[in-house]
Amino acid sequence: MSSARLVIAGLNGGTGKTILSLGTVRALTNAGHSVKPFKKGPDYIDAEWLGLAAGRAATNLDPFFLDAARLQSLFLHASAGASISIIEGNRGLYDGRDVTGSCSTAELARILDSPVVLAMDCTKMTRTAAAILSGVAAFEPGVKLAGVVLNRTANERHRSMLRQCIEHYTDIPVLGALPRLRDNPIPERHMGLVSDREFAQCAGELDRVAQFVAQHVDVERMAEIARSAQPLASNEPFWPVVAQGDGVRPRIGYVRDAALWFYYEENLEALRQAGADLVELRIIDGDPWPTLDGLYLGGGFPETLARELSACRERLAGIREAALAGLPVYAECGGFMVLGESIVMDGVEYPMSGVFPVQTVFHPKPQGLGYVEAEVVAENPFFPQGMVFRGHEFHYSACRPRDGGAVTHALRLNPGTGMGGGADGLVQANTFAAYTHIFGPAVQGWAERFVRAARGHRDRLNKGTDLS
Image 1 (cartoon, rainbow, N blue to C red):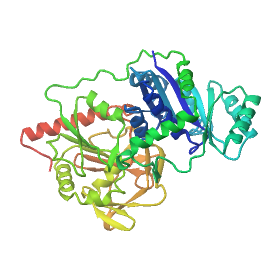
Image 2: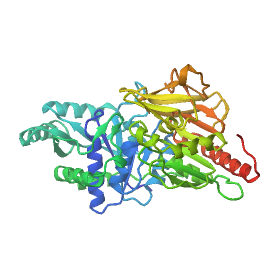
Image 3: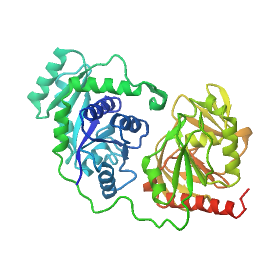
Image 4: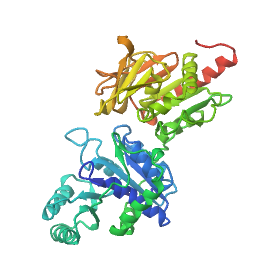
């Protein structure tokens, strides 16, 4: 049986649902509720902030990666022990991949049978707000619009007029009205919110957001709406039993520092379930690394910390040496950029590890954005040739071979941009690197193959052989 649950959605991106979600999660947590945060994916940054607000890691829920039964199973697994689950949507409530709204926040709300609270930007609007809410409530069957929070209101007269109009023309409860904020308490940049790992005052700012929301929104009534959700049950355990083999569990390191920290917690858990012991590492200002059987380099912001990364010459050289000697290395987006020869940021070139003969160049606009479907077209340790799997990309850098040289790609994306023209994925020894991010539980066998490769590498070293 599930905990109470509530989806916080918006009419569009930038409508204020993230501030409302963070404030609600933090306010409920500060009031003594055990809150489990979720983010309608794919998303790393908002999820990280939600986790910080709740004091427990957030989970991404995405209908593109998992079918309805698996989403319900993941929700129940992740929300176990929580008294309230808050699910932040993305984009507009009904915005999806196609004209039918597939993979939308509305679809996720229906799958979870969850009530929805809408954050609504009311800038220069009064009576029209009622018309919009009427349309949203009636647009699609099965969506339970349980309330609205009015955002960016001008003054008390504006708020009063909005409430009167909505109460007169609709039966949708107004749960609160947020005044316009002069400054965003959580800074943003090219990929969204600034990482909490780069913003030292994050805890204090979250408390500020919580106070702001609690002052203007009936947060306890939102909790009551969450508790009105009907019980949700699933007979399918999210993590199936996997044969883990005999002997010592291989040790896989994953870098989590200010430069690389984009990881779905489910990816890490998938590796543990497949038989690995995980150790958290740092490239920047980190302690010496232990002996590893495998290495996972997630995404992040290596471009903004390219100078600091480049200064870690000994660590980068060690990564290159280990990769070329056959250590299984799996790298996504930012991790791939670290494995190239250099990163170019604001016209300055910063040397990286040089595992692959490519350079990544930062651009002011996205070079790849959205869901991808990848066909595996070259041999590698992590995916069998011919396999098709789903992922996503979000990168402002573009990849180009050094000195006009050619590289062979392991993935063919359709849709997707990757490293250019739908080609993605580079392979060197047992190292695989791509712009494509995956959600591990949705890619059959990825974790098991990673762990198998790590175990094999350890066994080869124990026998005195390598792949160099």
